Image (cartoon, rainbow, N blue to C red; front, side):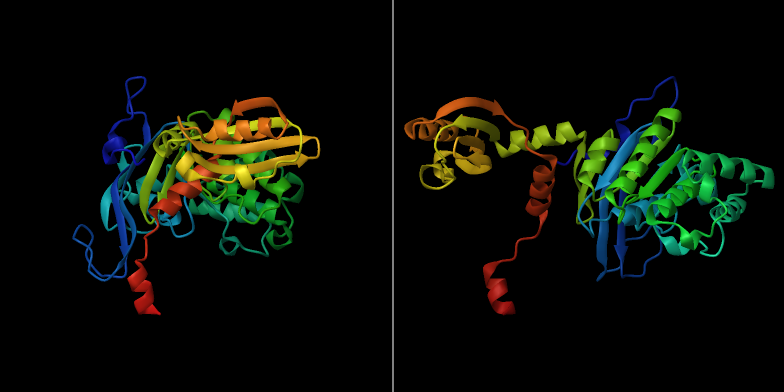
Length: 364
């Protein structure tokens, strides 16, 4: 499932110039040992990232997905110059973030949900003015850009109220405003909807979507645990686990690669007739190609079964035959998608280290 580590070199230039907004080339990070940059990391540390390589096109939105501890935040911090990598390099519009961090920062915006980085007693407008000054904007630029962002984000009415009185959704919107103050060419989001209620989260996603349409050349990199969020917003996703890229591509591509590799098919069978349940003849039997039968909907008049089988096996025929033998009628049988949640969980679980039984006994 993992693509070639040289994928970072595979983005084709458009319009006579390099179309890559971001390139990560064999980026690794080890915590816990002391070693000068550019030399092998010290022994005894913990690897947070290992040979991570990818490229992002200008104007593209990608998602960084993975379980907690997969390395998403560490990768964002390396790209945005907050920490050094142990090996590898990162280019933002051709600028090496290690060799020229100040120049690289002028092209980047970072949206983080850390509320402690704002000043509670200052108003939203005053907070933006403070961070605008750190960006090196003039007073007139700060006022103009701050007003524009507050209006766009729907915070104009609360612009002069103290930050500490803001709701979680308002605080997150102000964090987005701060990340865009310098008219960033690449914007990085670290879990932009974490801990938000569904309405606030949807508002943030809608704003990011609208921002993409308003600024088509702006690039967005979103680290998130919300798989539905990635499906809504991202052109491509990278799935990380234990500091490595397990898969990258569009959601549809990753789902199809997994389906082909897993040699599985999913069908939804709608039937009319007596209640069948998932016991007896409909119990899973991997030796016969029937991996799972799940009742998505059932009543005395019939129901809908979700059937997972080995491709080109007799598993589906076995289920259909059971329905007919029970006196039922098959109303519909259609191929169904394997959900992205299922694909994600299967890939991550397969990547987890297996503990040998003897090791477990010894530890006990």
